[in-house]
Image (spheres, rainbow, N blue to C red):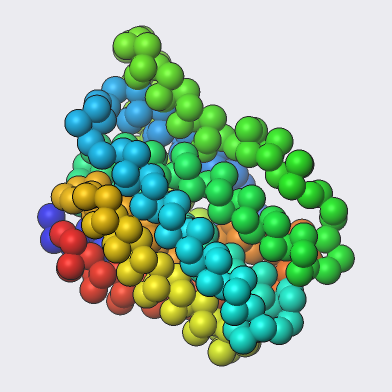
Amino acid sequence: MHPVSAILPVFGLILIAFLLRRFDFPSKDFWPHAEKLTYYVLFPALLVDKLSSIHLTDQPVWQMEASFCGAICMVAAILVMFQHTIESDGPAFTSIFQGSIRPNTYIGLSIAGGLFGDLGLSLAAVVMMVSIPLVNILSVSVLERHGHGHSGAGITNTVIQLFRNPLILSCMAGFAINGCNATIPTAAAEILRILGSASLPMGLLSVGAGLSLLAIFQGRRDVLISAAFRLALFPLIAWSIAILFGVTGIPLAVCIIFASIPVSVSSFILTRVMGGDHELMAAIITAQTLLSAITIPVVLSFVV
């Protein structure tokens, strides 16, 4: 499938949800519940379903993980080294930082699945399993240092929460079933398949419902800086490391997909709780989501 053909439906669903949310349909209370349902039930069902039956022994999994995590660490290091040049205001810097390293897994999985089917979804889950803990620990560390008025949750609590993360737990469960060569009973497997098939559209609708066009005009310089790191520099670094490690084909494409997608909507919640600039975070999320509809096809044209 051509990259544009896979990407257009993704952003089409985001646009539909954005319009529905503007007209308060079905209601303002619907969208938070839909996001929780997706995060705690539908998305984990998809991951267990795909990972429990896929075979990745012939794929360069460790090289792909190292490439993506290496890119996260390099971008984070550059941001910290040049913090005062980028943004001297601590809370604002935390939003730029998160906006530069946190991937939106709903969009990443949707594009990977649309382009490469079950293999794309499984490789994407591998990327998620190692990157979710890393970006959360890095983000909380920066918020602890530069945020204000936060809850004081700290790194220890973050690590505890990571082991309760339904996405990480579902990835672990799927790999465990796969590794033991176990078979999920037919009825249970069908339930997982049906629930999982609803996860990506619901996830994308939740992304669209959370966008705010008014927020874009606040802190435009910081928004552009974060977009440059997330949508341009990050994919370039990830591609360079992946080529160095000999990653090619579909694994390379999946790695670059996750390197070029916009920031996760969940960044807004963490920013608000831990004293970051949540208004700037909302602007970064919206701007990156809109810009990525243009940048992702350009980036993927070099690897797909």
